[in-house]
Length: 141
Image (tube, helix red, strand yellow):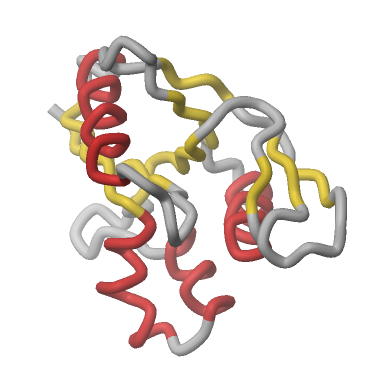
């Protein structure tokens, strides 16, 4: 089986992050039977790698460009955005998603179900700037 890490592009102050990541992990296991998926929160990756990267732009580049040292494949097979089409994101997430689209890395929405069961992944295709707000001025579609 192939390992597949998914980068969960969560906002810094996301409530119930552990529950949402666990739900996304269960959905990834269900939806990717040919792989062994692991969902990694953006917060975890930030804590582990930001200092080494030196800046927001450096870290964003690293998330997309980082490769496995043995296989030389990208560490993250896909980027996952919490929410549904039209969700608003901040500048860092918008830059990350635009770079992912540019290198043709798959980007998906993920939303939890109200009944607690794992939700579904839906493809995202673009990021649009809607306002000058640094915190939530971009929408993802």
